[in-house]
Image 1 (cartoon, chains in turn green, yellow):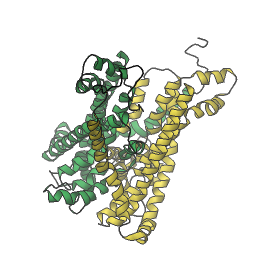
Image 2 (cartoon, rainbow over the protein chains, first blue to last red; image 1 turned 135 degrees about the vertical axis):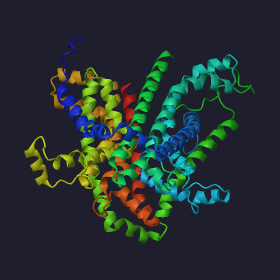
Image 3 (cartoon, rainbow over the protein chains, first blue to last red; image 1 turned 180 degrees about the vertical axis):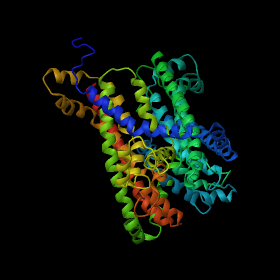
Image 4 (tube, rainbow over the protein chains, first blue to last red; image 1 turned 180 degrees about the horizontal axis):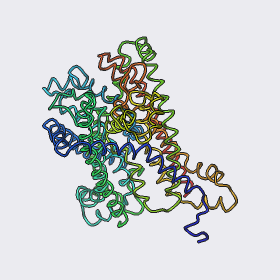
Amino acid sequence: MLFSRERSVLPGFKLTLGFTLFYLGLIVLIPLSSIFTKTSTLSWAEFHQVTISPVAMASYRLTFGASFCAAMVNAVFGMIVAWVLVRYQFFGKRLVDALVDLPFALPTAVAGITLARLYSDNGWIGHTLAGAGIKVANTQLGIFVALTFIGLPFIVRTVQPVLEDLDAEIEEAAASLGANRWQIFWRVIFPMLRPALLTGIALAFARALGEYGSVIFIAGNIPMKTVITPVLIMGELDSFSYAKATALAVVLLVVSFLLLLIINLLQWWSSRHHAHI
Amino acid sequence: MTPVPAPDPVSRAPVTAAPRRATVEPPWMRALLIGITLGFLGLFLILPLLSVFIQAFGKGLEYYFQSITDPAAWSAIKLTLLTAAIAVPMNCVFGVAAAWAIAKFSFPGKTVLITLIDLPFSISPVVSGLIFVLVFGAQGWLGRYQNADHPWFPWLQSWLNTLDLHIIYAVPGIVLATLFVTFPFVARELIPLMQAQGRTEEEAARVLGASGWQTFWLVTVPNIRWGLLYGVILCNARAMGEFGAVSVVSGHIRGQTNTIPLHIESLYDEYNFTGAFAVASLLALLALVTLVLKTWAEHKNAALKTVEE
């Protein structure tokens, strides 16, 4: 090596790292720390009372339950979509591939009012479902629909690249050893997709937990029935109960950080897994 | 993009009516899976997208243009453009600086730094807005300091009180909340890209006598341009479409602190659905343009990679 590690020929290390840390502190870390200083003004009993009140517990059950169901439905359909986009050719495939990212690009408020109108009793889909006796708007089912929309791209986009890189020889080897198509999928392909699939599920679940804009319009926000935790926080803010809002925000933050940790572990696992192949 | 494995007559078993190979699905299975994909995406993506435009024109062209040229709508559009015009360039400069430091140099704590940069993505939009209320609100750090009886720096308190600051329920709060939620976009695109590219090209330029800035503009920027464009497009889409965080800090003052998404909410809450969808169609159009540009940037980036290889 011509140059020692300590003295790189490239300039700007101190400048760029200094600016990065300064800007990160100013925009993210200092504002975020306000949550914890605000919470410290609450006594443990007060904090406890707010975070395990019946209203809060109902909102956790709903938020976690709907987010989990939406992530699971997306896991199944996301796998199928990723499989079809990688393995098959059909008319309009590139358009469909590009459209998968629509929930990332479409502002949540637009998604929210659109889904609310579509699934309302006189909307295109809601009208048909109402005939079958199924009500979606202003119910927990509506929240599930909105969260499924929001989480749709995550599983497709995490599974797709792994499926693309998969070596055809492995499948051929399994076939020549007498495995049928179904066995090859479950015993050979699926185990290789598992880390990516779990990462996608965790990402979709994490996104759904904090979701606000796409849910509020279709949910109807009926107390104890269709109020998700972010809406509960918004309600406390509207009545200027900042301490209560902050206590609930801490619960959401802690869960998000745990999920972030799990996602990082999963990605570490999948990179190890990949290296072994 | 793996093409469908065609029957291979040269190396494999002779192509008589041999039993179907176990490496492809039977035709009915393919048709079923493609059908499920198109059905699912049609129901969850294409139908909602179409319904935005159909409902927007529900009361005719005249009402459509009236809705989007209404003074309140116009002021929301201007505020959204202003917010994006501040937030996107700032986070773009940050993203390039962070990627340069992380990808071109080695230092301890790099993984922690990358995780911290991604942090705003894992925080609920409502919580992202709440933190700025806790810092700058009347009950927050700033408000309590301005009203403190015995502040740490009395001159600072009196200076702040003469400034007549309006951050929360005003434009600066909206810009700050947008900066926070769009913070990671450019950085997280550029860090892996620049890490993969390494630093040999820049080192060569330096050894051949280029200055630091010349190296950056003539070597680094051409290499990262498509990745940068990709990050900027996504950052802009989120900046213009952010709802939850902005909703907390805006105060919803019509004609003053309503961005486009907040204006849509106001119209919807007044049961002016056609008006709401007319304004929403602008954002849906922005989403479509974003998808087109994004696909194009991905395509260009992939082309750049294959040329290098």
